[in-house]
Structure formats: C-alpha cells, structure tokens
Length: 71
Image (cartoon, rainbow, N blue to C red; front, side, top):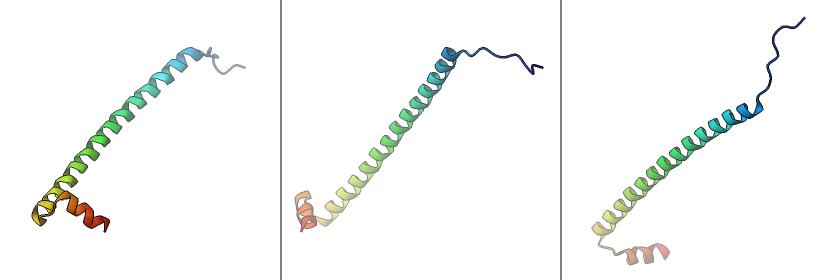
C-alpha cells in the first residue's frame, strides 16, 4: 500500500538552487574578507602612528631606529 505520491526529481532545478545558495555565501564571505582587510589596514595605520610618535619623541630617525634594531 503506497504511503504517498512519488515526486519526480528535478535535478536541474535543485542544482540551480544550490548554485544560487553557494553564490550567496561566497558573496557574504567576500564581503567579510573586505571588512577584515579594512580592519587590518586600520590597525596598521594606528600602529604606524604610534611608531611615528615614538620616533618623534625619541628624536630618532627611521634609519637610526632600523640600525639599532638590526644590531
């Protein structure tokens, strides 16, 4: 005794739906990667600002600081 109607598989439609979902998630990942890069850039700018302030207060030039760090 059949328990239900057997549905005809529409593989093409299902593949299209899956591809659309994959693209949606790839777009979301790309957006998140862009935001992450923006945050990294902001962090680098802040760190460079701190370094420039330190060098200014210490009276050292960039070349002097590099030479001192290299030993």
